Image 1 (cartoon, rainbow, N blue to C red):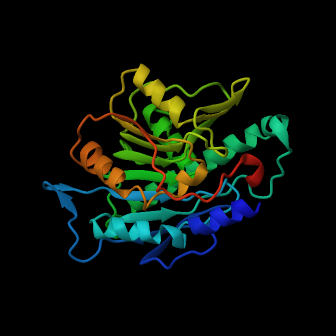
Image 2 (cartoon, rainbow, N blue to C red; image 1 turned 180 degrees about the vertical axis):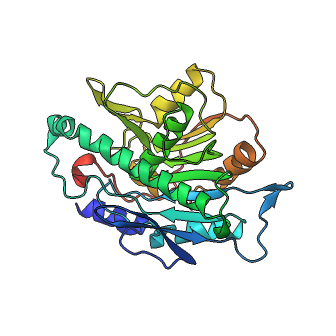
Length: 307
């Protein structure tokens, strides 16, 4: 538990930062949901080769148990994005695993599988509600027709599930004709209780970052009887097999769930993805193993540390 609390502290989940703007976007039975908007720095370039840079909508992590939409840890990352001309939006979502007791071992995870999938789906519903709110309030100046979804850990699961739903035509509650410009996942996966998730059509450009030794969110998959997690490695191999050629996966050799907190560290890779795959629209595929001992590490986090 100490390792988990330490990583949560590093991620900023225990200390929210003050936003430039805060808006209520949804009422739920259990809580109200808010979003924060961080605008580009004065004088920052908001276009590239005459093309408007996208809005980055970030979904926090925390195992669907805890978290803050604007943790202090990601302030440095938001600052980087703002100084490079990007608007950043951070959002609340309902924490579906909060207060839920998961029994130990594989059998406990199997029994909790429905709750895990529900957590993903209500999180996705709330993110879609935030997008709808922004679309319905154009005076806020946040164009949802130019939006990249990003998330870490549980937020990355919601991010990938959202991109999957849009690609497969099952997304609900969004503006008519809505499409993501891209999605960035820091240690993410897709939760499914009905077998491995299969893309029926090419998704938006995807950036997948994942540690090969991640013990919290499966790098490849953690599934029994068609129920479980399908991670970045599995999804990238599927995209390659189906000939979908607009994704980048960076496999961090022997790294654990630390990659969920690599936002500011990996900005050069994110910047290249945003500029080439998203803004300029290049069909670009990268599949790279990164073995870099200089990257920070805070100790491995496992499922038992979280639940």
